[in-house]
Structure formats: C-alpha cells, structure tokens
Length: 413
Image (tube, rainbow, N blue to C red; front, side, top):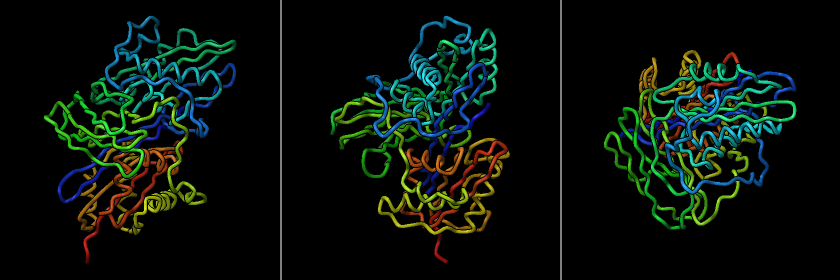
C-alpha cells in the first residue's frame, strides 16, 4: 500500500529580488497492518492526527546538529543504507514502536520526533514493513525502496526493527541531505542571541535564514552566504518555541535545507500536539480549490490582515501549474512552464510582487496546515503587498492533490 506525503514549497519575488522561499515536508500516517498481512508504506499521504491537545512526552536532545554519525550497521536491513545517521535511527525506532502499538505515527508526530532527536533534515521519507514474519526479504525491499527515491545529493538513513508476540515491524527514515547544521541549542534564555551556521553540500545560488517565533509573523534575519557557508544571528526575544529555517536556492528551485526548534525560557517535554491552522473550519463542504481559497482568507483574518481578492486569471495560471506538477510528478516552482513570474507574464498579468505556494497532500486541509506551519509559506499567506490570489488543484490517480497558490500585487489599470 502506498500513501502520500504532504510536501510544500514557497516562492516569493518582489521588486527588490527573491525573498522568503522554501519547502516544508511532513510524512504521513501509516495504518496498522492486519495480523498476518505484509504491507509497505512510504510518505505519500497524510493520515489523521494521532496526538491529543496535551502532546506526547518525549526526551529532547540538547542540540540540533548534523551529521550525527551512527555505529556500524549490525543487521542486513541497516546495511542496505550506505550512510546511517544516529538521530534518524532513533526516529525510525519511534516509528516502528508506534506502528507496533497500533497508534501509527502521522505527519506531525514523525516530523516532531525528528526535531526532538536533534535532526535538522527536511523532506523525510518513511518506509514501514509489517507482518508475522518479515524473513530475509525485508532488506531487499528496503534497498529497492531506497534505490527508487529521488535525490539531489546524499541519502542518509535510519532503520529499526520491532517485534511483538504475533508480528514484526521494520521501519526506516531516509532524507536527501543538502546541508549540514552546526550545533544549535534546543534551550535558550529568553532574550538571548543565537548563531545559525550551516554548510551547503550542493551548488547553491542564494541562502537565507527565517524564524517563526511564538507570536507575530515569520521574518528573515540578516544572513551572510559565501556559496558554501550560511551564517546568521537572531534574538529569541519572547518566551516560547521558535522554528528556524535555512532556505536555499538549489537545483530545481528554492527550498529549505535545514530546520531546528529552539525553546526560549521553557523546557521542552513533549512532542507538539496536533496543530490546526486557522481557517480549517471554513473548508467543510467545499471543493478543494474553493476550500483553500476560504482558508487563505480566514488565516489572514486571524492575523488582522485584509482579505485577498480571488482573480480568475490567477486561478488559471495556478491550475495550469498544478497540472504540470501532477503530470511530471515533481513539486517545483520552475519547470517546463518557466518560473512563477514567467507564467504570470505569459498570461498578460502585470504584478509588482509575485508569490507562490505549491503542495502535494492528501487533502486541502492538510496542504493548508503544512503551509501555515512553515515560516516561508506563512510569509506568502500573510504578505501585505499581495492584493489578489488564485488557486489551482490537480487530483492525481491516487486521489492526492497537487496544489498551487499564486499571489500577486496587481498593477493598477
């Protein structure tokens, strides 16, 4: 059985040049297998929330950093991956235990576990194999899955095995690593200044650090970039959790390459509870594109920002790009149809500012939630220079949705 992951990507372009751009990924829930059944899952769809409002107790690492070298693999399953990461091994063990317990990890819990384990990686893939007796076939299945994963650079992996009275579970997490992050503390004193240091592992034309604090809108911080090293400094000036993103323009366009959570003045003790995005209640009973449009304006209302006007021309541009991504099975801002700005120009739309969020998710609510939780995507959703927007949704054969949201500051006629 294959399930779809929720993937998002944001693009913004103003008169001054490219700004907050990024990707956010959340792996999906894998339903518990029936006794005696053998099933494989990857992160190609989202399941229901697994956590209640209190969150889930979980020990957090003292820093977020990469790589985290792991001991030499001891079993055939582990040896299927050439580069193991200790943090990803621990996340795989978490996923295997959750699957064995009958309360499988969903998009948010796997992502939160990765942050708690101090892994800054983004765009993870989750593989699960369960049954009464996995036998010798599990390593070959895992190896075949790894070989089919898209990659730009190096795949790092984590794997784990869990056994019960009647069943076994093999779990693995793999990420395509584009950057490494120097140690960033998980806890800090409120008011402290923190340094972000990352090293790019692939060719990069631009990079920026964005932060999303416990209150207010996300914002970029002064960042230096010399083609290899990314450096930034920011102040955690409010008590609470802060999400830090390192964003870079690499092959295929802009995307996040590292993320970390910092708790200012409080101690983390749990994985975060399920986090609904503002506006989700507006989606009920609506077609996906209309649901996304309603949620976008509701999210802006929640922050006291004026609503956007839905423009049919932007709808057409967004719909065409959603279909292009679906047909190519590739989430990107730049493809055979050019960049977001190119697409608007061809449509005869003159804009002073252009933004785009794209996503691949199980439904409209999941796409919106993942976009809202990412600093770069939320920046587009809340940008005050935009006055109009359009939404396109293309349904895939597996019923998942390819989503494109186009934002623009339209020139006066």
